[in-house]
Length: 229
Image: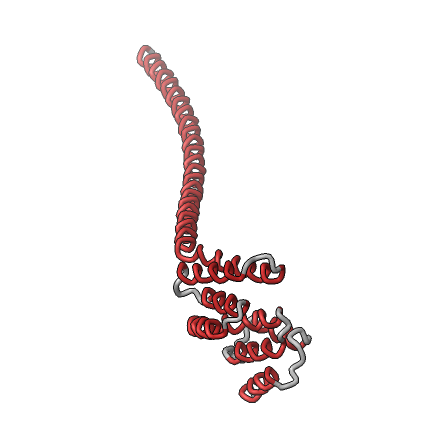
C-alpha cells in the first residue's frame, strides 16, 4: 500500500513537471514566434534602409555628375569667351558701321580706323577683313576694298559671300546682291541644303533680292537640278 502511494506521488510530480515543461515550451514557442516577428520587422527595416541608401547613392551620383557637368560648361564658356569673345565686338561693330553710314553722323576716317583696329586685334576672323572692305567701300577706296575682300574670301568664302550679298541688297544694289548670292549658293551642297540656304532661296523666290533678269541665280539652281536629276 505504501509503495502504491509513493508511485502515485511520483506520477503526480512527473505530471506536474511535464505540465510545467509543456508550459515552458509553449512560452518558448511564443517567444520564438515573437522573435521571428521581430526578425521579420528587422529584415523589413533593413530592406527599406537598403533601398533608401541605394536611392541616396543614386541621387548623390547624379548630383556629382551634374556638378561636374556644370563646372565643365563653365570652363567651356570661359574658353570660348577667351578665344572668341572679341568676335562679338566685331559683329556689333558691323551693325554700328551700317547705322553710322545710314545716319551720316560719324566721320569716315573714324570708321576706317575702327575696322583697321579690329583687323589687327582679331587675326584669322573672316569678318574683320570684310569690315575693312566695307569701310574702304564707304570711303571710295577700291584698291583697299579689293585686297580686304580677297582676304575675307580666303578666310571664309561662304560667309563672306553671304555677308556681301546682304550688304549689297541693303544698299539696294540688287545686281551685285544676286551675283554674291550666286557665289554663296555655288558653295552649297544641293543634296544637303541647310536652313540658312533655304531662307536665302526663299528670299530669292519672293523677289526680295531683286529680279534675276540675267539669270544669275537661276543658272545656279538649274545646275543643281541637273545634278540632282
